[in-house]
Amino acid sequence: MDTWILVTSGASFVLLFLLLLAVFRMVHAYDAPVWYIRMTGFCGVCCLGLWWVVVFLGWVHETPQIIAMGVIASLLLYGLLTILFLFGVFGVFEASITLHILTKIALSGKEGIHPNAILSSYNRNTIVKRRIDRFLWSGELLVVGGRYRLSKRLSYFMMRERFLNILRWMFPTL
Amino acid sequence: MSLILVTCVFFSVFILHVAVHGYLIARGILTLKSTAVYVIGFFVLWIFYTFGLLSLPLTSVVYYVLLVLVGVMFYLTPYLGGETPASMILESFGEKRQQTFRDLMGLFTNTGLIWKRIEDLQMAGLIQKQGTHYSVTGKGKMAALLVLFYQKLFHRQLVG
Image 1 (cartoon, rainbow over the protein chains, first blue to last red):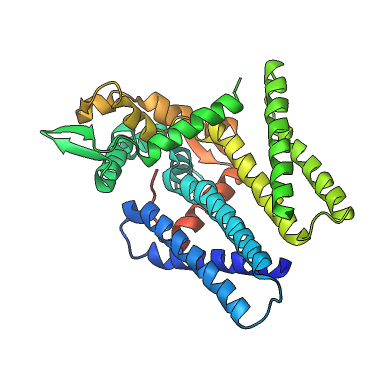
Image 2: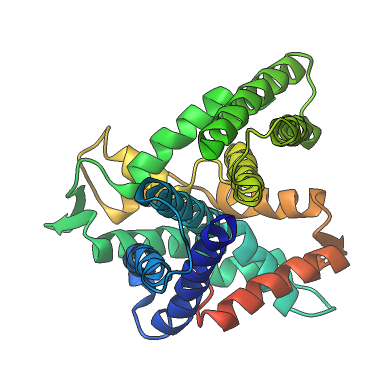
């Protein structure tokens, strides 16, 4: 049972990783978060399917209650793996301004880059415009008469900010 | 049963981490070493295992490791993530319901968005200043290669 929990959750996560490799090549860049959530749900269902196969083939001989616990444990591990990937890898690499600057400097080679050269292609104008475009694409913002306004009362970023406020309260900085 | 025990152990250690962090901050110390408290959880799990309370030992350890990684990641979020431009844009609509591009641009400066981050990168030892130019250090090159590898692997463009 112990091994099957690890196998099913691990296999579901590997499947998610492979699907993301394929899907991210096909969808619009701004749609990536939506597809991440869709694929996470799909692979969660696949995790249940794997358990069905394992039970159907008679590879586990436990009571239905214990098997149900195993399935819940698998989904828990899979859920934690996806959270780690979403916030630890995907979120950081997708939207980090710091990493964007670092990459720009790295691509400039040994001679380096003058800060003005960074600013000429990457500045507050491009940063703000990119985020507004993303919000318009996702439907979080609307344009009415040349002015932007919120279309949703509660968005992912709003929830993220509320959550961050709790974290800031728990782990205050100097 | 095993996972309930592990969850209880994790949250107990997490509360301890919050307390240790608060104690250190009150004394002006900000250190990542406070995350070492999570090692206590492994000892507790080992004791549970010795007394036969963990029916799923492998799953329990993996579950605890993942919980700790999530906990440490969330602990680091206020430092690494800070208040992002995206959330600042959305929050600004709480004060002014309709805004132009100019209004939204006015929320930011190049100093806050770019210069501060360049300084942070330099302080972290990821980039170095050579005269008027900035170049990456060995550590910075590794980090940048990781970003480029991610972009190549997932066919992503430079975002952020």
